Image (cartoon, rainbow, N blue to C red):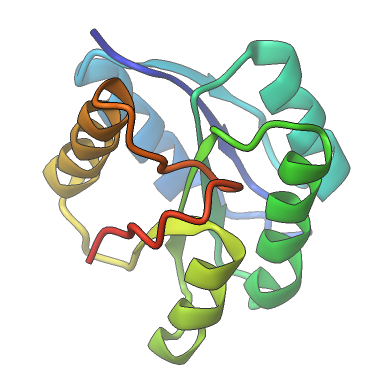
Amino acid sequence: MGMRIVMAKPGLDGHDRGAKVIARALRDGGHEVVYTGLRKTPEEIVRIVMDEDAAALGLSTLSGAHDVLLPAICEGLRREGLTEVVVFAGGIIPSGDHESLHEDGVRAIFGPGTRTTEILDFLEAARQRIEGGEPVGVGENSGWRWE
């Protein structure tokens, strides 16, 4: 059984082809996907995750603002009590920024050229951990990440 996933494009980034490709692949992989569209604020994304009762949040970013937007979204999820939401990101995110984003609660970061099967494998691993009672959400300080 698939997860309910929100796919979002935070900030002013105007390119969403990649996010749409990933959303389609996740649907084809058995997940229920809600795509937010372009240019969402962190607050809007958190509200959509809450309203949609999503188990996971995928964030696509190409604008270079990932170091500000992604931590703000993770903090917003925690503030709203959405600590069990599994957050993953993709796009242009320099490897030097990965550690701080992982510490903020992003459980996986996928770069350009990542095969969609790897993202599906990540979500399956997260689902299995959740079913096993292991903490994997944005606010659960598990230390688990996909690498």
